[in-house]
Length: 121
Image (spheres, rainbow, N blue to C red):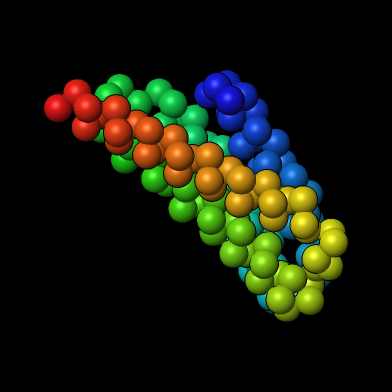
């Protein structure tokens, strides 16, 4: 997967999370989770784009850590909404799987960049 494919994938992930978040109930907990899920999932896409234009390998490694954390946080909020029975597991399974896959892809990308940086030193 190249960086343009992953840009599209993370943006699509953000759109899907927003659509899921809209289905949360209109109560204090629903509003809180909605806000958090929208914030962290859109941050995955935005911060991955920022990492892609990093000017150095060291900068890329630092910047890619942000969408890793945000993708994992997206997993948390989806799981939390399921735990609180605000959303049905079946409704979220594909998106939860995507969040975990994106997290893994970004971690692998950071590891590769770190390995390449260490080989140059």
